Length: 108
Image 1 (cartoon, rainbow, N blue to C red):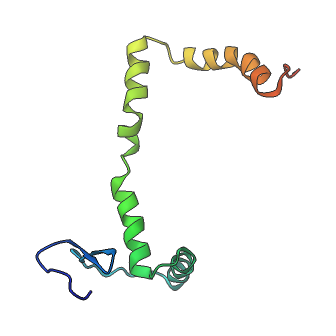
Image 2 (image 1 turned 135 degrees about the vertical axis):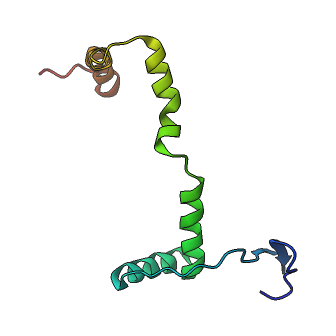
Image 3 (image 1 turned 30 degrees about the vertical axis):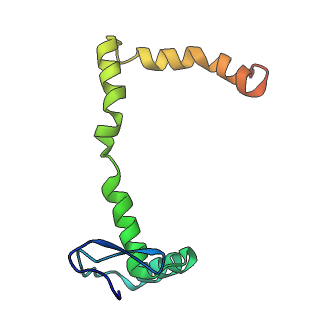
């Protein structure tokens, strides 16, 4: 990148924000995977390193599943429900949900 200050991670060049590379890595991929990633990068209008960086950034920012579901688990544990009660509750709510979605109950 031209005119990028080496002591900063980001610079504005000709109205665009340019990121200075702060990590370089080599990734060995099977040829079929490489080809698919190249297709996806092309469809996104970016080169392969940019596309790969975007994928890694998204993955790094996602909370682990356990962390994402912690509030639900904590609420369930605090509720005192037995293992069978959540299923029974959902089954009891199906008729009302079907009426709300389709306007009439489904006959089973």
